[in-house]
Length: 197
Image: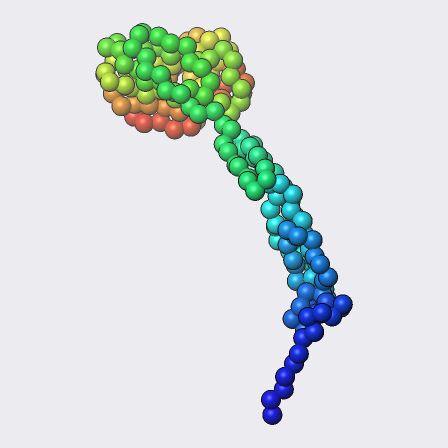
């Protein structure tokens, strides 16, 4: 026996969710429908730059992305841009005999003799310096000012102007991270046999 089910398209009451409808009359244009089982759908309106994010219980919610450290977010109508705001590390090839390092910068030593790199007088915790040999075999030395020191594993340079790190062969390089503003650095990574004094 064939059963014909007719739907009255002109009915004033919307078709219920239990019967395959939304249970809504004239939902707002542009809103997102959220199913609620046999209950009528709910709607979510997203404003510029928002996303729909799921929850552990209940319906998803409209939210704005929170920018973490070093990240920026810009939301617009139909757009969402996420970008890295950390400064790009700049590389400088030093062909002279000395240079004073700047925070978050990297250097190559390209002099026939030893290039002396002086630690920056002002450096915030977490800032980075890198040094490596360049196109020559002259090598490099990282010099300190009063009160400054560098930790290398269980070793530490002599505090102040008497302490230093130095390359011993072409290809040596180090990455230093400031762990105490203006005064102390930790050798995070190294290549070669670095001399510690």
